[in-house]
Image (cartoon, rainbow, N blue to C red; front, top):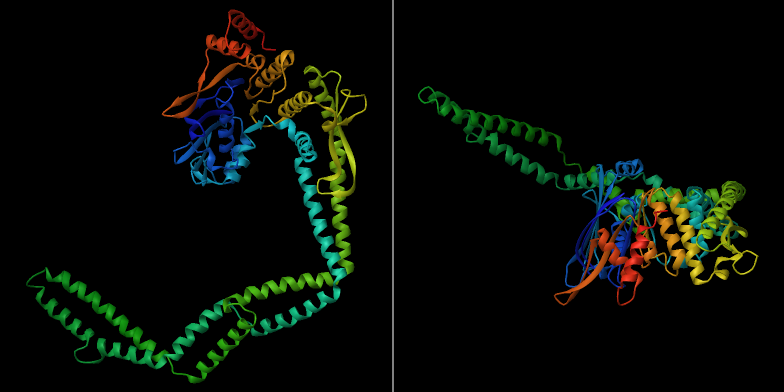
Length: 553
């Protein structure tokens, strides 16, 4: 669960340090006080897209840190281990956004990507936004929500991958069938070009060796002269270095009997004498080995010219020729496979069969889940004063196979505007759509694996007795996991086990948002404010106490 959230210089928030509790909590306050900013800050820590506009005016950067308890989340520990992040009893997600829009992310103190924040965040928090009911009108949103609740997301992803593989090969077959003459010409040209490169038998290592050998052969006379000069200086004459050092060593050794201090100097000179001897030996071997060979120099230069000519012809650098050869070889293999249209067609049939087998498996699972989801959402709708309505998940066959399967998922309602089930977008009013959306969200949240659920004003368009029912539903969810709800409804807030109040104030010509935990007596005042108008009366205070005194369920 979410343990704490720290916010610094985010929109109108100066600094906030929030400690979260388990169960159902409500976040209330005046409109515009910044209630949803808390959710936006948490979403940023969970990998949402960063925007420079979130940095508070006049500040250099915004910082968000969220701490989660990992006691009952072994899958998060496995994810951290698999991605080489430190593992502890708590997980710290941190996000920094500067005024220029640059974003940095951290997981347990180590640098991470926003994508990694999103991946681990999927295990931790499920945020239901205040516009969720609007997204329910989109066919793709309905399908994804249904598949996720039914545990079919992995199978649906495999179906999509199989469809794309089938489509790509089918397109390749169509191109090969329509342009076989052109492909034959390309294949013949590649075979000739590859033959040239293969006959050259050129490697990157050889190019480096050729360049070194060319320099050595081209400057052989100068190399021999230089080595011979060094050899003469070191040991070739009476006054050469090696002999002079040897004489100094002998003289000092004869004097060490009179002053032992000279033994250290003599030892150092003996080391120098040994090093000089090794240098003389290596120079002698070098002179014996190096040779002025004009014929070999000609061979090397001809080899270099051949490589350069082929590289220029294909507009690449010599070291790039082996890579070019490998690319051509792969392309030639594809062309040869494409030339065998019968074999290619058989592969297309095999991939189509594999796709249809997976898609049919998905269809069977969807049909089984549709009945369950329809009945469960309908039951929650009845609690939300939509007893006349019946929720259905329709699976509409598609004329053509699609990446998401053989059918389109469509949410339908029957009973609200006639007995016939019709598309959600064509039946529900704004208020009804909000309640239906909430019913779906409550159902999917019950089956979700995440320990923390956040509802951001999802009770818009709801009031009266329905609002009290919504509060009870959220309280029931809070018995199983951590729930936080941003709400304007006193009936919802009164059902919370704990409550925060958001307020804003002026400070140094700037608006600052703050949050504080409400004690029992303060909750009465806040609920009364939400119930009443401009003036809070004794009647509204009594009503607030009555709401708070109601049993949790």
